[in-house]
Structure formats: C-alpha cells, structure tokens
Image (cartoon, rainbow, N blue to C red; front, side, top):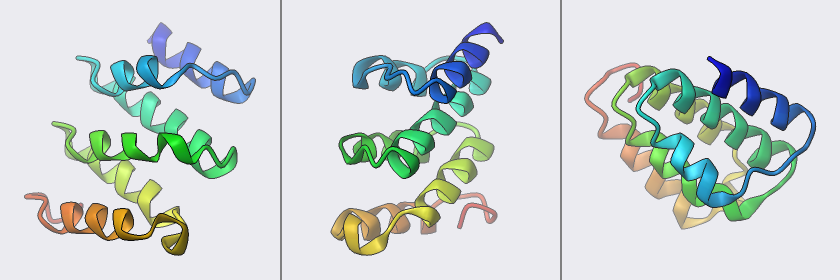
Length: 104
C-alpha cells in the first residue's frame, strides 16, 4: 500500500520516477502497485505529454489481471490517435485479442 501512495503522491507533485523504475512498478508482483503505476503512466502520457513513456502502455496490456488491462484500455482510449500513429492500431489489436470480453 505504501508504494501505491508514494507513486500517487509523486504523480501529484510532478516528480518523475524514471522509465526504468516505472517499468519495474508496471511489472511488480502486486496488482495494486501495477494499477498505481498505470495511473502514474496515464498522468505522464496524457497530462504531461511525455510521449517517450508511451511504449510502456504495452506492459499494461499484458498484465495478468483483466482489471489492469481494462485500466490500460481506458488510457489508450484517451490517446490522440493521430499522434500515436501505427502504435495506436497495434495497441487496439492487442485489446481486441484479449480473452476477457470487457477488455475486447
């Protein structure tokens, strides 16, 4: 729980955590930490326009919990399709192939 709170606070304070650390948190063993990392990623990509982190969205789509994959899908739905180009279409295809109907 403390990692989730810290990550949320860092996002609110506009403190960058770095690509490697964020990637580790997106792969963390606890789904709640991964969810917090997806929320942080959303803040960075959508609000702070940090396009360099867009590649990490793919990690969220491969999450073992459908809730985190669904959270990632909502992030994708907010991306500007024109700015994302072919990567956007790849992400949508990944969602369409998900075994959980809510993610498809």
